[in-house]
Amino acid sequence: MASEVVKRLRDRRLNVWEQTKELATAAADENRSFTAEEEGKWAVLNEELDGLDRKIKEGLETEKRMRATDDAFDAIGKRPVEQRAAAALNSDGRNVNDEIRDMLRGTPGAPKSIEVRHNGVFGNTEFRTLLSNSGSPTSVVPTDFYDQLVAHLIEVSGILQSGPSVLNTAGGESLQIPKTTAHSTAALTGQGATLPTADPTFNMVTLSAYKYGIMLQVARELVDDTAVDLQGYLAMQAGRAVGNALGSDLINGNGSSKPAGLINATSASPAVTGGISTAGYTGMPTGGATYANLVDMEYSVIAPYRQSKSCYWIAADKTIGGFRKIVDSQSRPIWEPSTVLGSPDLLLGKPLVADTFMPAVGANAFSLAFGDFAQFFIRLVGGVRFERSDDYAFGSDLITYRCLLRGDGTLVDTNAVKLFKGGAT
Image (cartoon, rainbow, N blue to C red; front, side):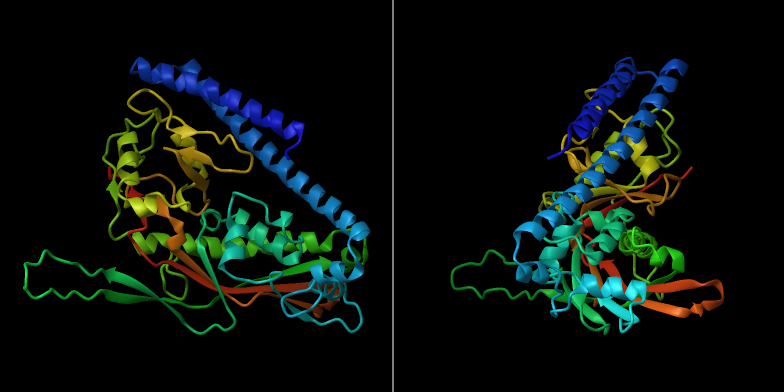
């Protein structure tokens, strides 16, 4: 349960949003742009909204860590030794956390390389839970190094927060995913007439195993200082770095020695192309989406995908900020703040996720995506590999760690997710 501090921040956020909504509604009712005074007030209120978002996120993260710590201490006092040991075991029976600590600190006899896997079954169900915004995986499984690293990987990639289908394979050979390109069709048939035949047609989407990596160098003094949360530090640094590299390609990859990203897979036939008008909201840049564009976007995705739990809007932060100014035909803002802590805000009733790698609003820019991201498949090979070297930076008395992740991702059904393309000037 959230603390009173976080609840008060949420209440303040809702109050600030009501003030911004009043400004937008008043201007829309009078069919005019903001005055200079209103524009200044709008900027101040939106800056406060962004600040409250950061504070709420930091508060929730702090509380999550505190709960994890409390649970760990409770477990030490309540669970038998056998159960405590089993909680830290990897799927192959290894005590991963102890191995990682020994490897990071260079304990004699510790391995120089370790592959970190998720506790328990590493499959679609568990991983999808971890990627979802609807719950905290640390409430049902122990928080280990893998969970920390993947949490940081996810937080920098909006597409990883939108419920994609994650496949994990032991090897890196090409993985082919079948998809239907045409379905069988029936026909009205007269009595005694020959029944028609119509076979479905299939195609294949191939997922490869591209390598992403980073080297981290840490002072030996930091490693020797037992008061430092070295695991948490390395998980944060490696997770963000690898997440940025993979997340960028999942959006913008061109399929040439890198993933065929979301935009590459769907840009050939954007669902909606904006006009040259900038009447969508006050100060809209060229290429922005109007209310009518957004409604057209929503209904360009067929109902089964549009009604999926994994149906999201994805856009860059600045683009999302612009949505706060758009109102519908009844002068009601179409952007709604989330009333549930930890859940995304809503656009036309559907969750809206920020992805820093989405293109900015502009002429001919694909600045917005909408659809069922369960049809976006992400393939990971094995676990996340960590390796240590005491020799690489021996002259500087630095310890070098290397983090490697192999994976790929693409949209398997282009009917599931659609793009908005900004109008040309």
